[in-house]
Image (cartoon, rainbow, N blue to C red):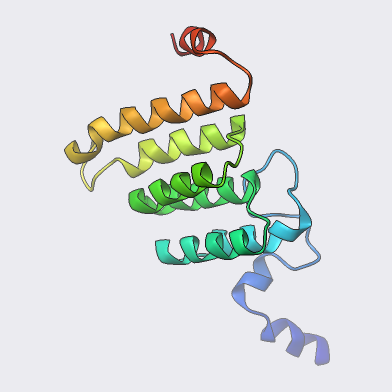
Length: 158
């Protein structure tokens, strides 16, 4: 009976991902630092864009704002199609000089494409020009982090 009561008292989140589980609901090539695991988990369970920004600010204050946390936040913005929040995450990433990895770049570019869509099919007109500019900027940033010069980045784009 005690075990049944413990199982019934768990939240829905704990039922899906028990603390003992190795599953990390965050996009990373390999598990990120242990300090940021809880932040990434909270970001993925955010229901509003404001919650994502709140968790990012807490990560900055706790000094574990890294590419895994940024990738997790970008992925959550993509899932919710939160354009403004995605732009805020990118701004924080740049401001705090967090590396743009290949994984983070892929998440960001996919997020831009999904968030730029409106309710109907296609890209919203007010986001069309901004979309290309933000994507190019991210690619250039990735090139500088990965040691590529502008010519090499141009070759990869074509």
